[in-house]
Length: 237
Image 1 (cartoon, rainbow, N blue to C red):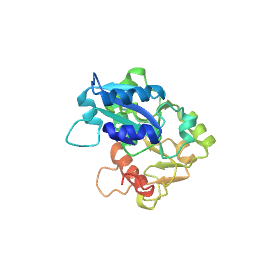
Image 2: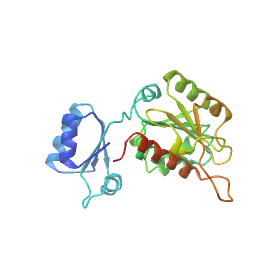
Image 3: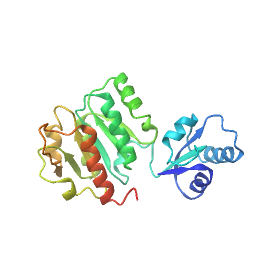
């Protein structure tokens, strides 16, 4: 999804659908300025960032890039459009801590998801805290704040399969079917996934445990299934 540096961004602008350009603030490179003109002419949003921001976001290389491009994900799509697109969509229910939500946003983005639905009643301050904890990864993936009922209705209307990750499941991650475009739901730290979501699920995955503490933290549970989904969908090679 990332195109790094002048040559890759130029090729992306010529041959791919670019959703966003991220450029170093006050960049004076003529080649970069030419690319920005092309982006503006195509109506592609351009956002500036400090050198450290681009360094942090870029695929590792010896030098910090002057410019990055995002391809393959419509960051301005609404929920209906995201559910109609390709790739996994993640759903988060009952999470209490904004920082944990931030970690989930990052995991959804890096694993190639089309978007993320966050269900619950959060104040604007809590939402901002979550987005800060995500390292502002919401710049690169659609994030929707919704109620569980509305999210389930949208998922049902889209025809996507709903897969939940919960300790009542009977399917191990490596036996699961997360190929294609499912919505995968993970639950909160205390109460887990609501029964209305479990009941609507086509498959419930259970992570095996053999220790004393009866649950994984949220990031681990999501990460295990995210990697399995990437494997089944041949992503990240």
